[in-house]
Image (spheres, rainbow, N blue to C red):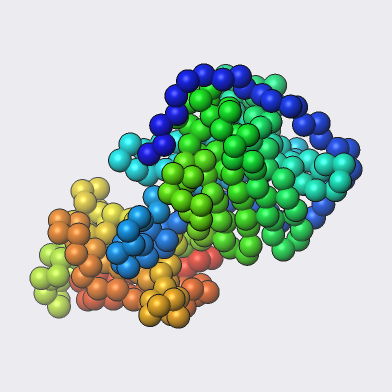
Length: 300
């Protein structure tokens, strides 16, 4: 893990935004997760497995600001929140300027106030944006001057942002310690909702048992989402659902996989596969039955 020390000033060379209209911009809002990248690294015994990263992006009503919540699951978990401001430079290129909060609890959503955020000019990302995606990069050496003054959270500053389709490819400040090509490949999370019924006797349930415990508020994300099945009294049943997008056979077979997991051993008891574009997926083992629909997400 990159260690950030010393202290430095917050801004270098203020970059003023151009007044030209912002070009066509793909919608970034949503949650992104590199679950498959982490899974693939472990499956293939990659020497250095990419850390698990979750990024949640909220486009603000103003249109040229977005809030990025970044969470790195490591031995010592780390989280950071950045406000990114989009503008157009005089040469027509796009600038996304990261800001860090100057107050403990900055207002978000409609109450967002840019005055509560400090620009990190040396970490500005430059590049292009169109209706198909975006490609932006920052000067890592220039950004390094600010990193000590930001503290440990600087590790989660984006140095490159590439968005194409459902993919968000990021290179963070901390990735420099893993080599020149290190980056995180995150996919936009799709949410499935539906129902599950588990028999109170578990896998040993008799065929005529009526001890069914129904849950109609199941909600699972497609990138490694996990849901604990509970009995009607709220106590855990000892089993969970796991939903994930994976690719088998050397990258030739992408699937959406729904699994039943024994929480005590961590062992997968059974699973069902569907194509990644599937809008429905389910399974039945007799003692447990599940039905999920991409279009039937329960409120919550």
